[in-house]
Length: 190
Image (cartoon, rainbow, N blue to C red; front, side, top):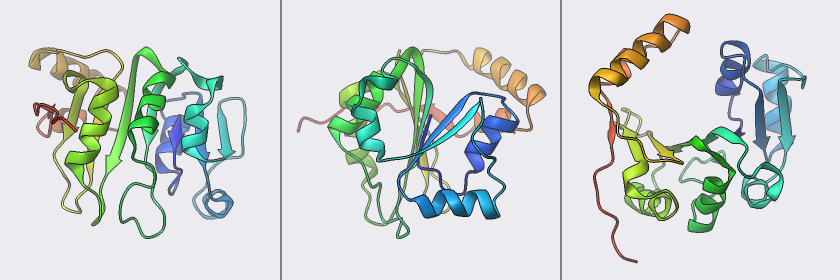
């Protein structure tokens, strides 16, 4: 499941390359129209569903509880100053959507965003030992992974998995290992 369609790059990749059943939630109907018209987002079919709706509202509904393996959260408006939905309640609802081995992936950036505050909110629902992050990009994006079940993985096991991913799909997974690490910060008290 994806919350926030953007230019539909992740949606198309999951649908075409990963051949995954994919549901995207998008608030703005113009974004969906633009993605279909200009960015080759396919029409809904048996494996792809684009729903118009509010991500926070969808996350709070029982419909998807315990059914999502990967939840991609990228919720920004045209200003992209900070995440549009970034609350304790939202992240708790996102955690409830995941299967036991599921993972939430959140893109955190924006000149008005506060990475530490967002991580604290995510940690309240997932626990600090379940959080990993990629190093920030030059444009300031930081991708955080929050696992439904905390993961302790050896470097060798990660390398083997990255090599499998790279062999199967057009992704530079072994390079990612250089910029991915558990978040080691202890949450502050509110």
